[in-house]
Length: 466
Length: 104
Image (cartoon, rainbow over all chains, first blue to last red; front, side):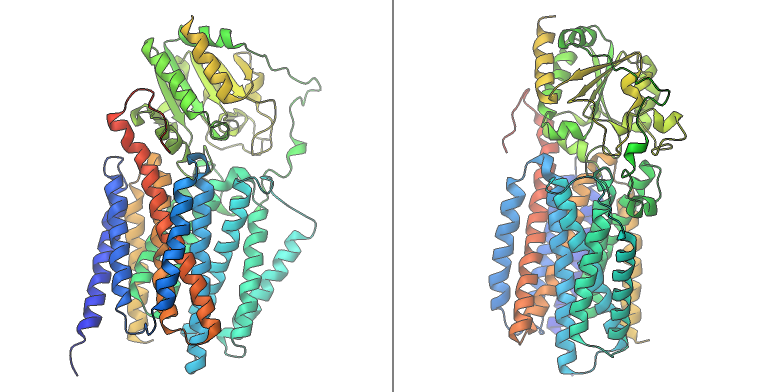
């Protein structure tokens, strides 16, 4: 028996690729090295894909030669065109593509394996898991995309009997899985399982509100990683296992961080239909509706101009209004006047983990001006103006003070402790959690109504003439 | 349990630990690029799609494999391109011109 040179070369390439992935991810931990980290990971991917071309299992190349350019062109086209504000949707879409791939690979592997002989129990367990998890991730990502793109309502969609329907579909999926694993049913059952788990992923994601999207995206990312690793078990390919689990683990970690930042268990985020019961909690429990005081652009400009310290609190509304550049213009104008300006970033501000940071980086905000919640919360008392731009639930003092509030216990930015609070907002509508915000009615709060982008550029103008 | 399977499970579990360790140090400011980069890395599933496409011998399998290759490739190439763009945002600031406008 001769030494399998080709097999050894492929294995070594896979090891090299795995090392490149790990170093790449490690370099993503600092803004200075992050770019090289992404490139290292891309090189690792290239090495792994080229090595795979030499795999003896591959008999024909034309499908690969045709499919890769098509996919690559589609992927890169969208990746370059999408605006920074739409990044979460884009990531959701790519994630869905990965999940679908994992499910299809599982189905194809099963059809192929059962056509040449008996499929072992272990292999069929892997196929069932790979198909189910991949399909859930795919349909979940598509629904998440539709919610983020606001094709679908961002509110949790709950209908009567949803729990029952979900339970029935789940039971059906479990039954099919058992039949496949025990060898009593074959490929046709696997297609049915595919359909059932697609439904399951869609139903589950529909029931989750827009405010919980950072968690959902992290979960879906980690599910696709897991499904990928499972296809590695099916195809007996270590590269798929290693890379898939690196992603699975990182997604899980981010998921936990995000749910911790909202002080809710993962189960509560995923299964409670949070925010659907909003009508019950509106302001004015003492009978008289509280009144929010309105501010003018000129008042606000003067308050900002004579402040010593200003903290900006951006939220998703900033992203929707595409106002990050105007906010930065205001901050640098204030900086020129000697005002100490910082940005306070809540961990779940935006629609995916760290979303606000990328948006502000796009507007050239130096990242040493970005402060995380724990750093900044002690400094609000000595802050003259807290400028809330399109943030809502993350500055709601009810989360701290009102045990009856649905978001009670969620760590917030203590904007209400600043000497003055100015809230830039379109109108008095509620945030994604669907509850009223006590901050808007505080005596030290003023509302500046209007489109955030327009308000901010008017503020910059007014500031120049102060 | 076969030796191959045992080894595969070892790899599975150890990779999970490495993943946790490596990611735990990433600051919140980079969570979006991190997520986007890991999103691109799970595009490695393209490799599985390539293997399936390579041994596909019926029209059905060929069809499934083709769709899988296209989607996997979109995941890989799109994922890395998007991450690169995000990280460009962080680079621009190091030699930033005041009031530089967005070129994208």
